[in-house]
Amino acid sequence: MTNPRPLLLIVDDEQGILDVVSRFAERAGFDVLTCAGGRAAIALIQTRRPDLVMVDLRMPEIGGLDILRAIRDVDAHCQAVLMTGYASVDTAVEAVKLGAMDYLSKPLDFGRLDQLLAGVREEIDRRRSVLSMEGDLAKRLEFHGMIGRGPRMQDLFGMIRRLAPHVRLALVTGETGTGKELVARALHQTGPRRERRFVTVNCSAVVETLFESELFGHVRGAFTGATDHKTGLFELADEGTLFLDEIGELPPSVQAKLLRVLECGEVHRVGSLEARKVNVHVIAATNRDLKAEVAAGRFRSDLYYRLNIVEVKLPTLRDRREDIPYLTAAFVRETSERLQKPVLGLTPGAERLLAAGQWEGNVRELRNVIERACILVDGDSISERELAVTMPDVLAAPPARPGHTAAAPAAEDKDLLVTVEREHIQRALVRAGGNKKAAAKMLGLSRRALYRRLERLDLSATITRRRDAPLMAHAS
Ligand SMILES: Nc1ncnc2c1ncn2[C@@H]1O[C@H](COP(=O)(O)OP(=O)(O)OP(=O)(O)O)[C@@H](O)[C@H]1O
Ligand SMILES: [Mg+2]
Image 1: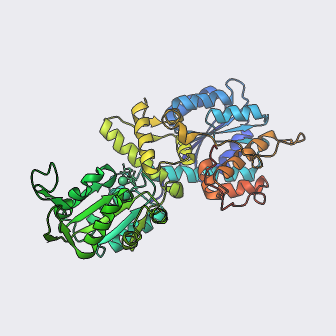
Image 2 (image 1 turned 45 degrees about the vertical axis):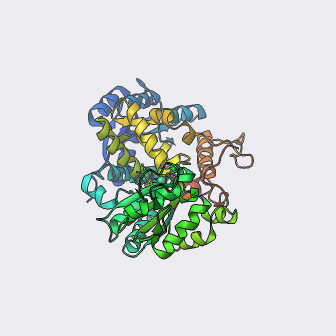
Image 3 (image 1 turned 90 degrees about the vertical axis):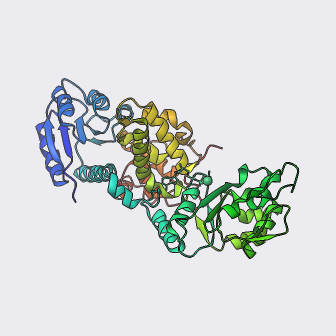
């Protein structure tokens, strides 16, 4: 299915510019409207809702910056590009503040115009495909409540599918909020025991002295306060699955007993000598580095080696940024339904901000940010404004790092706008640890578009990927 052609509005008082830009835009797959004056342009933006507006900075009645302001107020989804023969850093900065995605200096460089149109076209198509991911299609791409269209998650879903029919014991690892519990449930639901119980115990929430009795049960009189028999969670999960969440928190004494149960398939209720057979699949999860815990003497190595035969490792959100738009769209949908509030999505600027965020807390944090933004927002789109309130830490700009800051503009630099652009791109590259794909995402460009710019700005040679660099620079 091909997308309908996006609509471009060109605003310029020079007929020559209208003609030439139209020609390029039609070739790039846009439908085109042109307009010679600012006032008429604002009316057209309101009635025709273009996807992109290219606007001249200086026009007789209303200037380009005023049009940018109007766009921001009328339709936050509309992208804007400023065209100017009077380049100055101040205007460029002002334009970016007003939400312009780019600027072109006059006389127009046709190569650049072509690249820009192709880049915007790609971006619009991508956004549309995310937004149209409603209902069925989205459901089919989900895996037991997990969203992940990028290769890492698709591989992980495949692995779960392959493992689930066979595993009796699995370890799920990953940072907090990456979706370990969802993976544990998916393993259960795709496996042969899906009709049976899935019993969860969060090891960090159990009082140390009660662990044994929780897991294995006790008989009356086994200890003070044991006034009755108690069935342990292993017995409760018999024929089903027991999910031992946060297994890194298990006290050493219980670790030994757990290992025995895993080895012989029998439990002893506390206070009883009688062994009871249990047939339980065990899935354990942890956000700790169990190997390091073993090295530090806090986790039994024999239990560790037993558990990690089948390990499912979850990637962090930083390592699968390509999924951010899809996760975001799903969370917006979910939250707007729950709140009964017609929030449709994010503005392009807000999407770019999210893509550039420093995600320490992974999917859970993204979900929280979106939920709070949905609560705050007045209109139907979440903009940078709501994000700035809901994710100050995530958006914290990295400090300029000595040695990695952009070179000071040479005094003779004719085109200051180029300097601004170069610095902007360099900053993104530094933040992305040199990863061009990630930098392109932050900048809201396709990778191809970024490469073209790097060439044009003579940056391709100077910036190479630094593998040791963190994905994001952190304040220290
Ligand atoms: N792939 C995903 N698609 C959609 N939602 C997800 C995905 N991964 C995680 N979530 C959501 O993020 C939140 C955290 O997920 P979950 O509780 O599974 O993480 P966790 O790894 O167990 O975290 P913790 O270590 O803190 O226990 C939940 O609200 C979950 O629904
Ligand atoms: Mg969890």
